[in-house]
Image (cartoon, rainbow, N blue to C red; front, side, top):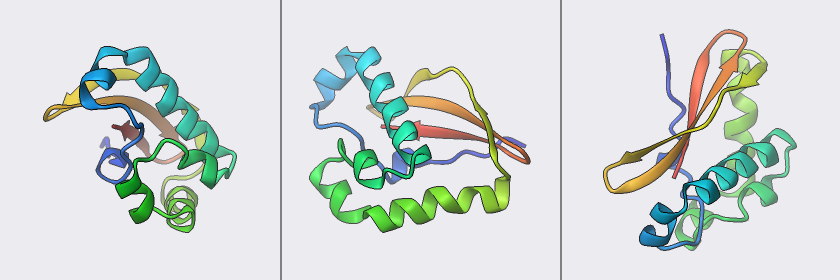
Length: 111
């Protein structure tokens, strides 16, 4: 069963206005990958770099750390990341990156 890690509901990445963000899929993808790279490196402040003010206030470095480091307890170690794909949730463009863990496939959905 594919479960989804809904980062988009928690992490709104990017300071771009919606029209700008929608116009540049490559930039959205690069930011999503940079977010995951920072979390993999336990660089919580680096992962929060592109958060807007509202999300930065709600998602502290400690909270982000707890989220990311808690996943392997349930899903096992991260085995690989799949190729990013682009979609929308409502009017919000998102980047979806498959994450294959030892026991569970997840998707990082980054808005």
